[in-house]
Length: 125
Image (cartoon, rainbow, N blue to C red; front, side):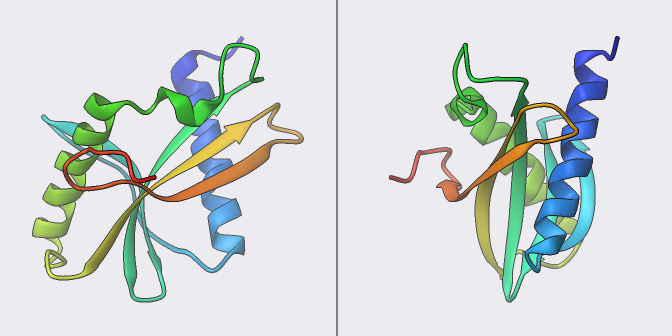
């Protein structure tokens, strides 16, 4: 049986392919710092997108996107800031997205929440 980490990495691979099919260009995967991690760093047109991938086998205990709280958002922001600084992208237009992956790997469903939170970790919307 796959571990939670292995399931998460599998969801990230599925998410990467799904985003690429929609025109996103993946620049980096799993950028980690002491302060946090961002799953995918992408470009959609002129916008630099930091994408947090969340997955669940089903929604019996809530949707995947519901697992991104303020603390998690701030950890993504910390890693994103580090990536942007290291790659000369601090002046780029930046967006924080959450991609929810639900279901089995053979037939997952995806829901993208563009601008899911801001750089202060606050929810947008």
